[in-house]
Image 1 (cartoon, rainbow, N blue to C red):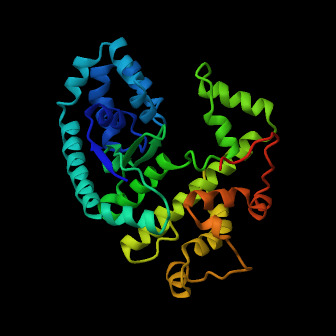
Image 2 (image 1 turned 120 degrees about the vertical axis):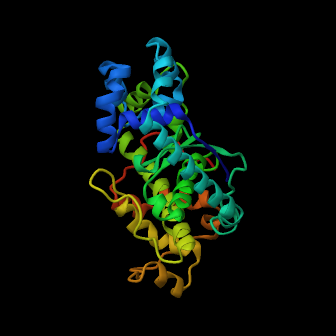
Amino acid sequence: MDFKFIMDKNYLMLKMISNRNNIEELTQWKNSIIVNILGIKIVEEIEVRRETIEEFFISGDFKQFVLDNHLNSKINQIIKEELFSQYYKETLKYLSLIQNTWFKFKNGINNWLKETIKLSPSKKPVSVYISHPKLNTGKCVDQKYIFWGHWKGIEDINYNIAYLCHENLHVLLPNSNCMPPAMKLYYEKSENSSNQEHWDGLNATIENYYKIFDFEFDVIHTVIELICDNELYTILSSNSKYGEGHNSLDYSLAKYKELILPYWIVYLELSPMEIKERVPNFVFKENRFLDKKDKLTIESFIQFLINNATIRKALEVPDLAIDTNLKK
């Protein structure tokens, strides 16, 4: 696992204009300066993409958007503005902090992933586009690119490392050694159809497809959380981070984590003392066993979880109604 850290002025500009976190100084800057440079129509077209601005930027649509609207000279004007220059300098400083810290921890984390997590991390660097920490960004796009920047990373440098590794695992998982059946159907999309058309077609022809796909994705996501947000972050911080993770009204993995945690503890082969340090009140409610084959790699562990009848029953997940199996 390795990263190529990138500071891109166009991406930073898009993040500042879209202003997903409604930062007051950016709102004022946009209304008093940017609207006068770009025009309200262009600003609104950027704002409407605030939740998908990374996809817009990386897909090439942004370059076409600039050409179609003759924006090159206007963008050059924006990047000379005082507030943009301030954010740019602060982002460069933040990038340097992350880069230096990653260099310090890189070898140790890769050895830990290989020896303890039993994952073979890719040696090919993943491009990481750094945004200003005030803009709170954490996303993996197309299992190829990472976008990162968070205010918590200024207060706690380990936060950046744990969550960069989290996003990197979204690059690595699922993979050819671990491709659950519903996800496999989605990733085998014909080049002639769009992602949305393919998704709609699968849902139209396979009963409960979206529910099965979401289950498979959320199992993988929960394992990624346990690896990075919880175990790695705990090791880096020397205190338990097992309370970290997605648990909001919009998106929660809390139920998944409750069901998977006992198996995770067995997978890591934690001692009673190590368990207590991580989850003080944890008690095995019933025995949890993993066969040797389920502990060979993190991929085999994920396959075990996805096929686990107890977990599927608790989450009310049906079997896929076609003849397909996890790729061995």
